[in-house]
Length: 117
Image (cartoon, rainbow, N blue to C red):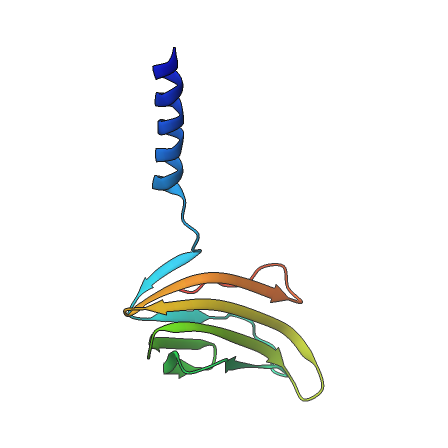
């Protein structure tokens, strides 16, 4: 009976170790963020907390970032016009050895927001 308990505990711990992933996503060499909101009175702006990720491509609703150095960064995207902020999305990333780990994401003013790709 004692061996069944030890085997059961070991099996549960093994499953936790195999399937536990604290990251929402892991990306190699770059991330892209795309939005499809079209309101002629509003535009997307982004702010970065530091230069651990740098912008390599940008169009109206598309941003591509590449790692610059190891560390953490917050990317904030704001959909606004001159007087009003309609949406705000904050992504938290960790960069280590050209890999980008998506830690957290929060959207304000909307129910769902795009995942980085």
